[in-house]
Image (cartoon, rainbow, N blue to C red; front, side):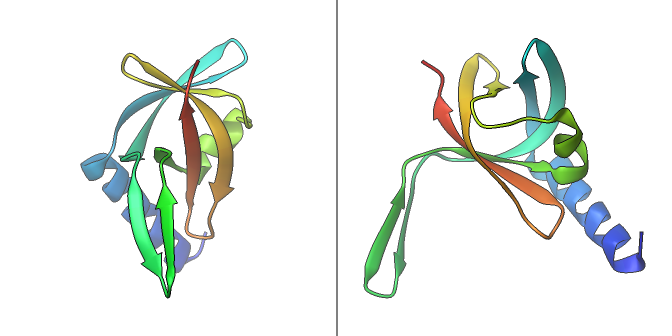
Length: 105
C-alpha cells in the first residue's frame, strides 16, 4: 500500500468513526456488524437546467471491510430496527462503497 492509499484509508476510517454509526449487513444467513455513514433519504439537486431528486437512503462503507462480505443486490442492511434491501452497490476509487437502499417489505 502506497503512502497515498494509506492516507486515504486513514481518512476514510476517521470519517466513518466520526460521522458513522453501526449497521448489520446480512448476506444469506451470515450477519456482520460494520460502521457506515448513512445519508438521509431525500436529496433535491439541480444540475444545469435539470432537477435531480433521489428519494432513496444510502449508506457508505469502507470498501476493504464491505467487499469481503460478498454482498450483492437484494442483501439486507439493518439500521437499528429498520431493515433495508440493497438496490445498487457503487464502489468508488476512493476506498468507499455506497449502497442505495430501499425499505425492506
